[in-house]
Length: 115
Image (cartoon, rainbow, N blue to C red; front, side, top):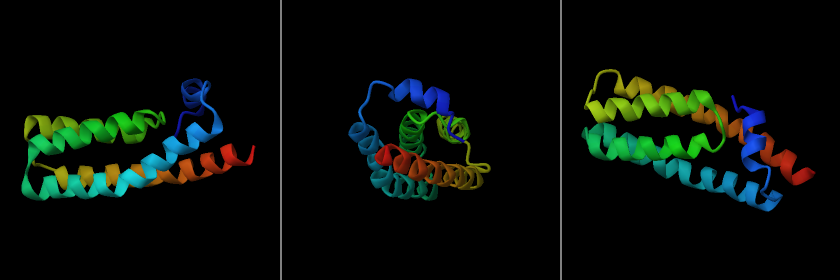
């Protein structure tokens, strides 16, 4: 769940168009990010998985969603330690958290564009 207070502090100096662009960019890049991470897991390419999980962690941190951040951090850590145990399950949890985040972002985007 998005921490609205922190999100508002983070975006307080941005205009509505910039906020919607940031949200839209996340929406447009997310499917490719997920596909690459699944491929990294399938190929056991821990180097690229660490890069991609770390990158996603940075992106979701912009929205102050502690659940998505935590799962991305855990995936980043597993890739760093080259630990395959539970990797796919953790990735599924991350995707679920990001799907919840996207639902919140759809609502946030609607709020921003209607005000």
